[in-house]
Image (cartoon, rainbow, N blue to C red; front, side):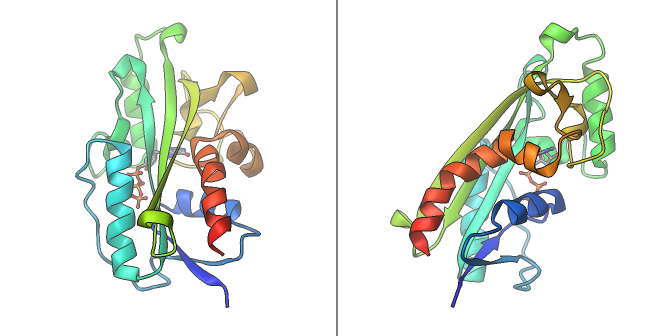
Length: 200
Ligand code: ITT
């Protein structure tokens, strides 16, 4: 019987990306709702690593199965690294993804093209008895710049303003396959694949 792998995130955009990146692996991939896990894990860490491990351990303990968690975000140099680990909550809890995109654009409205460098960072934590020492962490980074306006309808979160110069488009203009091949989450996932395939 296939081993169960829990994707421990409530972010639907991330779920979509993980599901498609895990096509072909011999796991039964499930989400938090499939296992009826309704705990909320507070992201109290100050780094992506701390928060990814916190989420993987808490959800993994609740589920009792192999668990993969992601902590990720947008780091903008001209904003001193903001939104960073606060990316999902930037500007306050009540905002939508579009509101947060507008907030970043507004904060950068006096910042010229050269100074709009940014990166997406993802840290993945895989937790389970099957994992050597119980925990594997992987990190992926993609460099880009903040566009002057939102462009494209694919993806989620800050994708409409994340411009990848080498591809002359935002990650919201990329197909699923294209984003996975360049993205922070795609890169982190590639380096985790070895650990995953050695388990099943
Ligand atoms: P979980 O904790 O349940 O996984 P979350 O959305 O709260 O969901 P994070 O704390 O890791 O997750 O926040 C990540 C935020 O960073 C996310 O909500 C987006 O705003 C942004 N982000 C991360 N990866 C992104 C991507 O590939 N494209 C666009 N925005 C992204």
